[in-house]
Structures are given as structure tokens and as C-alpha cells.
Image (cartoon, rainbow, N blue to C red; front, top):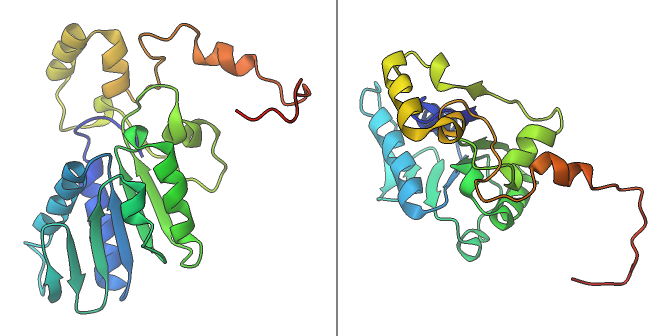
Length: 213
């Protein structure tokens, strides 16, 4: 989900997590963000969504960072520390919030959690440069991925007047990244991403095959 700021992607992800937990007993849903504060914010949204539900599911555990329903489903909010999440396995749904800012090592760590459960993985974010697993998955990922892009101009909640003011205030570079979902070269980048990519050739043999870096 490559979506503009304030486009509602967090709310949609929270609904997806809640639906999985309620209608698929004994599901494990993990929420991962660059910081525990961000994960807990998405967890808070999820809790708010249960308010207007009729016949709310019974909870057997409920705290600031996790909950368990009587049907055995669990929703757990985690921070982006590899050593704290390796104990989880058999996840049915993993939601990676602000994925463009989550470290690639963590992304590699969570993928095996879906191996046995054949679960789903949602990467959602606004872009943050032409780098990292979120950028690579969006640009080069295979057809197994469903890509959803929503710019601020497509979001009816965001007024055109506000966007005009943001463009004047932020400038083109930040506006295109934050509101138009464009992967931009970093400001201090010497070479453009396309230049570096074009300089690579898999057919060229390595000069030192045994060199370890």
C-alpha cells in the first residue's frame, strides 16, 4: 500500500486485522512499525473500531500492546527490534506500518513467520527514497504482490486548497514524496538511483571471487 499521508491506510489495515481476528479463530496478527509508539498507535485505532461493533467478541486478554479473543485469535503490537520478534511463528497476518522506514534486516526476519501458516503480509507506507525493501518490492516485486496506490489528490478527505498550501510550503521534492507517493532520490545523493542501477551488470564476472566484504 503506497499511500499518501492521511489517506486512511492505517484505518484500513486495522479493519483488516480486526476482521481476521474475529472471523478466523486462532489467528495470529502481528503489527510492526519502526517504533513501538507507532505500532501502539495502530493498535489503538483497532481498539477504537470495536466500539460500534454489535456483539463485540469477548476478550480473554487485553493490555496496551496485545489482546486475545475468546476464539483464540491474538493481535500483538511489536517494535522493530529483531531480537524481540523472533519468538513468534505461524503468523496469519503481518502488518508492517511505515514500511519504508523499517530496517531491511527486520523485514527478512518476519518473512519466515509466514512459511507454515501461508499467511498474508501487508507493507504500507509513504515512500522514503529509492532504497530499502518497500521500494524494491513496489518497483521490482513479482506478480504475487497486489499493489495499491492512493495519492492525496485522489483522497476526498484532503482539500485541494490544503494541497496547494503544502506544495508552496514543502516544495516539490517533499510534496511528491509525502502526497503523490513518488520515490524520490535523497537530497544529498551524489548519483541518481537510475545511474547506479544502470551501472550494474549481472553478466560481468567478479574480479576477486573469494573477496569477502
